[in-house]
Length: 119
Image 1: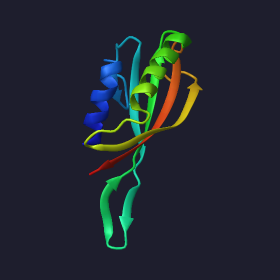
Image 2: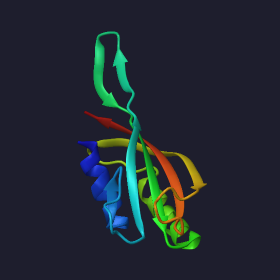
Image 3: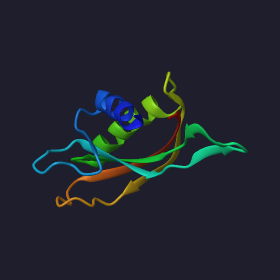
Image 4: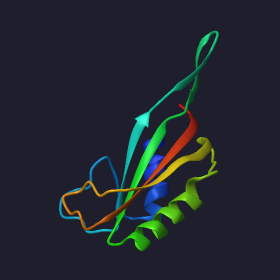
């Protein structure tokens, strides 16, 4: 499952990596990742077993420089990443965002990746 691989990769850079929502009581830095869409490739015979999901990774830190440093490390790891499961991982968007947590003192950077992989 691609989420398990993504969790392992993200956790190697940021141990506090969570799908969709950060558990209550966690302190920055942390990140969340969310599957935004999942187009699946087809040929004339039907599905070919390849998906190209788009994942949004939201990086949160106590200040902008810390968030930028963490986001840069994630981009360096994932953009162009390939292994036995992942055929390609491409950064398709990066954006400085406002904080949507209950603690508006955090800085946030959003990264979007398209990950091509076999299902």
